[in-house]
Length: 465
Image (tube, rainbow, N blue to C red):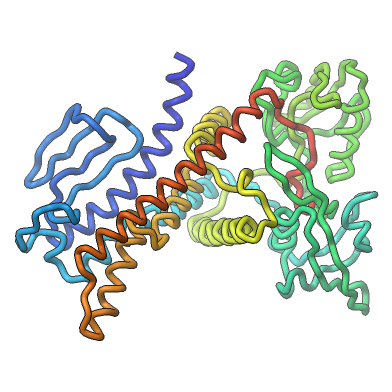
């Protein structure tokens, strides 16, 4: 039963994204009069279905995606030249069919992100403001670089006038790498170099600088996440969203200094009970838990966050946020993969396959609907972009061959069937190599983590931390 509960979130999140992808191909094929012989939810043996017109709508045995079968689509089919066959349609129509699947995934990512923002939006306002440095943690990478409170980062890695969010993500992606920057200090303009410290979070290395932003007046210190393994925080009755105002009857500041004081108080407790005073729904509560040892430090098992609390965006701001957020994800992906290609970052912590997606989907499901659908949005965007890669057997490969045929036709040449078959064979081999790589990578990353407790109560969620 436990295995079944673990499979359901994975099967739904992966299946839904692939079915949505295939629906994009299906609807555009129908629009252009291409006969769709099969629309299957799932793979393998047909369990149930109905035939409507020329299409068999079916549910199949293996619920990990789905597929669309169009007449005359495959190279090994006997093409009759019938007007309803895929190959009988103009190149531009075939191109639209190929593009429709990835586009549907990208649209889905935008819609999910926008809906989440309309339900629960908790991005701090300082992320979109100029990179003003309100504080610098003692002994941090920022202090070593010469940054001081009151500085404004005017340029980082060639980007002019970055927001605090821009700085945060560049720090995050560059552990132990040098970031050149221009800093305004009063009337001076200084050239500094920041080398973020490397911090390990869930088997990945991220950058930490020790920069503290200028929080809004309504910022608060609250419980952002609780570990999964029934930690002392959960036993004490703590809940996500609780505002933390005191630890052992000592008030804590509603900023990074308060969070640091909270972490230190728990870490230095010696395993003795710690009382956290919170405000929940306007009511003041004293919650007592006994920290337990985890990776050489006492912890209660929750992640404290400084923020302005959740709010809801209206439609247009939510759509704007969804667009910007998905662009940011694409940029982060590009930078991370470039670092892998240039050997500045390990592929093991960057590329995830089905085993880790299984783990992530289960973790997200336990954290709640918002986390789960947030992961679905991320996977949908990545699936759409991945399928646009010019690798034969992927949609991007078909797009590439159609464009190549068009260019060759301009000079009186054609792309032969034998050449297409060879390209498909090469693409299949490349895809299989990639599949084997990510599977081995997943196994290496997931298996050791079973004996590696989750880190919590580390101030890693704050920009620049």
